[in-house]
Length: 278
Figure (cartoon, one colour):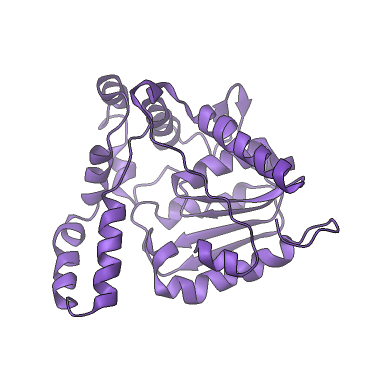
């Protein structure tokens, strides 16, 4: 996906959040949104001599990006968000059911663990589709064992899926409580450092990318974004694939990303005499 954007003339900066150490369990969502994202955006704008750039957020990064864009719209030229949980009040995904306060005591989990281990998170993701994740995918591997391209992709995905890092404890606590349990984002009631995250402040062009078969972030969780932002220039792209397939499947590379670039390119031309896209 990144290679596709680079080949089409875009400069791409990818945020590496780093791996939270034990003492980093105190990091909050404000630290990630106004701290990490904010500093990185300011660095890029200064380095490139720009006033605005395009923000692209994926999954939980999409939710965090939505918060940043709503709080700092003056720095964002376009907003692209993919497979991001925005409206948490649904039961289309088991995650939304499991996270209900009557079933999940997030305070006890965070107070006991500190940072949330990747094994804890991956175990939950696996049981969203236990048959597919434990049996079906290995049957497909056996059926395609003579297909070198299939085997290479399978091994890459297995390495990626099992190469997780911890999630900062306080960030996990806040995301579960304010998101899954109280659904504050879509209600414009989520506050970061005393500032209310108001989706109506998002008035720049918005592209919302959704996977039809996403069992982590179902379409019903992502689709409401466009109805709540203040932008008039907005588009929804839906692909018949899952959460990860949006970025790695051959179908997405053939059909989704050319459409995304076609939408983004005219909205990204620099207004200055400099050549390029931001």
